[in-house]
Structure formats: structure tokens, C-alpha cells
Image: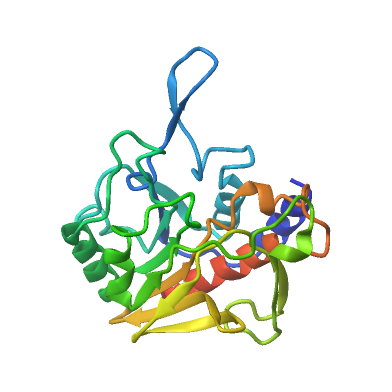
Length: 258
């Protein structure tokens, strides 16, 4: 846990977010593999997964800030999103990842849009062109003015970490201290109102925020905060992905009105 343990202790001392729930999608990201006994087990960007591909460390950040964690195995509806303040969708499946992918459709997208408009905070973490579905998923993101381009930027060869480096300046509205972060092989974004860029790399939009009604959306074309790149074990110490994950989590809590 390295960096994680220190930061969790620090942020656990902060006032908890009362009655706030973060729900992680297990419907559009619905991948299974077989365990040693041959039984199917859910994996890839899920709360309970402690190896490289899980998001257990990000889950611990939410825990430390007093946010209740949940997951959603069904298509989103007004009823099953009712008690959720933050809804996270990571890496929607392709037909290579699931034999029967649950693609985004107009009904689901409308339910999510209405939930955001009523005050929900939506987090969209896509992936690059080789690892995620775009044509259906853009039906949702485009309702907020966000189009995932389905490209693959910051391709890193071996341990050439600099190829995946982004420098976020101090005073940023989300990452206020300024961060050096590592993000590789991500989809860039094309925006229109109400979306706006909150981080660009030259002419390429990397992160975006949209405000709709009482709610907000944060989008980036990479799962980003999975364990491999926040646990402090693989990346050089100069990268601050764990701290950036904490920054974003605090911003999401504030955006949810807590």
C-alpha cells in the first residue's frame, strides 16, 4: 500500500461526507475470468480486486472520506440510482471482453442524464481504442457535450515513463496543488456545450467537466485510478497519481453537495 497507507490516515481525519454513496458500474463493465477451480469470477476495475487491475485503493480513499461504496449490476434506472450521489462507469465492454456486452442505449442514457440533472455526479472513465467500446457509449457522454474520440494517445514503450507524463499546474480547479501524473494510452475528447476542458495537452482535450442542471460530469479517456498506477510500487516516486485520485475524490464529494 506504501503511499496509500499514509494518505488514508491523513484523509481519514477529515469530516465524513454524510449519507453519500458512490456506486461503481458492474453492468457496462461486466468482465469475468475463471479462477483456479474453473469457476467464473468478476474482475477488472472493481472495488474488491486488490491486484493491478482493481480499484480497491481508490475505494479506500472513498472509505477514508466517509463515503459509502456500492455497485450496480443492472442497467441504471431512476429507482436504482435514487440513493446514489456519485456514479462511476469505467471501461465499457467490447465483444472481445464479454460474450454479450451490455451496450449503452437511449433508455439507459436518458435515465442517467435525468439523474445528473437532478443533482447526481457522474464519472466517465473510458479507455483507448483497443480496449473499450465507443460507438454506443458516446450516446451517453454526448448528452453532456463529451465525445470520446476512440484514439490512443500517450503510448508508452517499456519504462519510458516520460511518454505518459502530464503536468497539471498548481491552482487547477480539481488538482489544486498541481500534480505530475501518469496516464498512458488514453482516448482524447471532443467537446461542445455544456462541456468544457479542464485539462489539455496542447490541442488535445484530456479531461472535461460538464454541468447539467444541479449535477456534474467528469470525463477522461482512461481508467486511470486502477491499482497498478496508484499503489506507489511501479511508477517512479515523482508521479502523484494517488494524490490526484484523492484530489478528484474530494472534488466529487464537493460536487455532490457534501
